[in-house]
Image 1 (cartoon, helix red, strand yellow):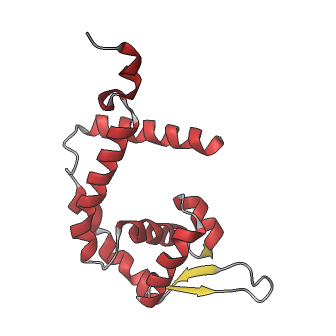
Image 2 (cartoon, rainbow, N blue to C red):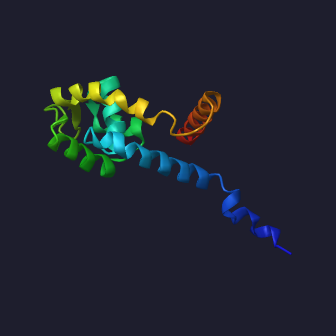
Length: 147
């Protein structure tokens, strides 16, 4: 006879585990198409923000991609070393770090448009389920941001 008080810590009863395992597997599948761009998954996420919104401060970027400065700073240094972004400190406020795309970074966007097609079918679910999953995850993330 099993002790029901331990059901709450059974792996199969956790929401966090399938989220973690699925996210890890999807990110792993991005590795091959992103290698052609010379980017990691996290660098790709950052570059998508720049392609969409243009230059911004490191703080603004961190809020958009849910990363702290300790994670972003070395990532941005690597992107700068690759010649994809330029980091500058405004004379008016040297505590802020402004980051913008270089010409090479902007040009990489043309190659990056191939990545979503390469990932198509990664999750073998009907489109309706994928859209519902995205909607639910967006709601969950919004709830976490409110707290």
